[in-house]
Image 1 (cartoon, rainbow, N blue to C red):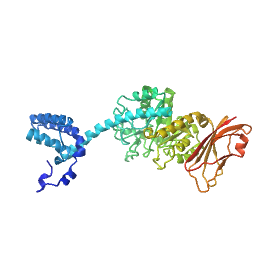
Image 2 (image 1 turned 60 degrees about the horizontal axis):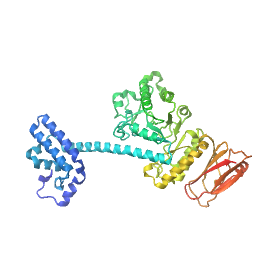
Image 3 (image 1 turned 90 degrees about the horizontal axis):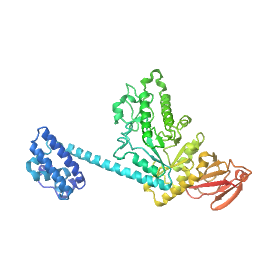
Image 4 (image 1 turned 135 degrees about the horizontal axis):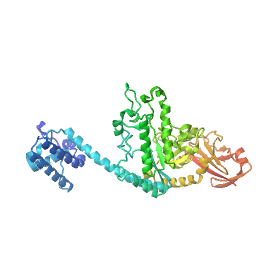
Length: 514
């Protein structure tokens, strides 16, 4: 049966039938099509549009058709083109004219829209469940490579299936976490890892329940339409009720769950600086907004003293000394390209402490630069700060996972030098090749980081003069497989000769006072 069959005097060719038919792929909508049709038939009877006995017969037969499809007793045909016409044809064959009443007062578009929505609702729930299982698998891999803190990023809450929804509705999404967060947290803790989670407390999406109930909670002007950025508005944190809401929400999670780390994000600026509640002080809203953030974090830390807070804002948008007096560390930049980070981390180090600098190893090609950089170089670059891993561990090869394990183990041995030592930006003789050289010194230990992003014509070595050593003491190290002992005076005045080869070559040299 074809909807358009009566418009032509001759039958279509088989190739035309195959071109028009969608049954090969939309047959997966059979359950949703029948569910929607049953609901529609019941509505028609309830409204008196069709007799109750016809509706009952339609419903009974549709349920029988559903059972037959699932038992493999129904064969769909190209002749009926799609799942909608296939099921209607089968229904009409079985009950006659009563079946033709099924789509009374129902457009074709409505039928398609209902089927697709029901199908997507089911698929999203199943996908969310699979994602929950993937999180468990990720946690196990994270433990295997030596991870100490497992952080769940954006997407775990509300109807957060995209950036358009979720912010403000801070409840655990049951589709993604059917058993709540407890199950994952318990598994993480059983593996002796700490647990962290992402929040963007100062923001709200227009589609959320929070915004619909409190549209006056955002910064706005009465005579100007608000501008969305990243599909969100900024909450007016200068309002006592908003500040109370944010504090209570975070306090609830920190009280109910065993959370060790909060990644506090903020992904857009204030574009409509309207806050009538401030009266004549409205122009000071930026200051008062940040003071509200400070106050909330301070109160949370007082009540939950073992929880660490990371300041993140579209990357490093909140890196400042004021923030550092309340937060524990910074998300340095969304640009995690290992080569670019040599410059970013260098600039950061002129003002801010290395210990507060989050530095992550992420996947390649990098999502911004599209560069493909060896895993060794990526780790060495990130080991210059507080090391983190943001790779999809499930996609890494066994070789790459082993590199992760080895580098993380090595970082644990040297992080006291990186995080608590003195930091030096060094220069070798940079003729012909652009070496990037950095040094950390902590008491009787030192680390030398050497990077060569690209070898150039006329490749030469570089001589690096170290700093911060005791010129009267001797130091030992192993360079390219050779055990060497040199005095502090020699290393700081004559220097150390290093030659790396190829592109994206790197070296991390441990130096110990004898």
